[in-house]
Length: 129
Image (cartoon, rainbow, N blue to C red; front, side, top):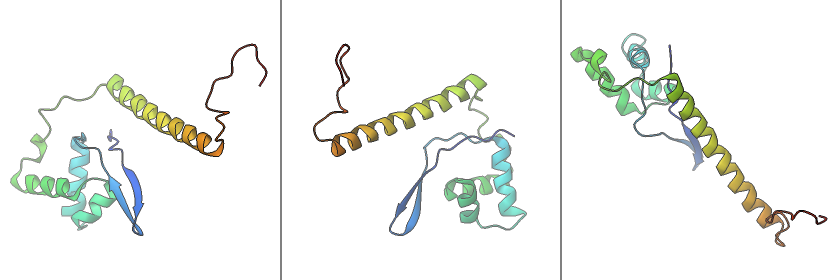
């Protein structure tokens, strides 16, 4: 079963945890069915399932309503499935964004810790450093 990374960013605010999700996440048919089973068969609440799977509770409640109508299996059929290359590209883009954020953080930290700018400039070739 292929699960799609919804990229949850956990932030701590006011003593609690806030999760920020990427909009337009693509969920597999198996994930939708499993989430609905957790609610309908195992008796978990929708917010509990949402927290466990990092999926908005409104999405899960929509899936449960569609299951009761009998139309859950047709959800997402209009969206094209991702190929392995597309999944790998998305992962690489995500890693690149993370590395860029880390680089920017380190640049700011170096500028703050070394106000003379020693680390800010690239050493010139042929000079001692």
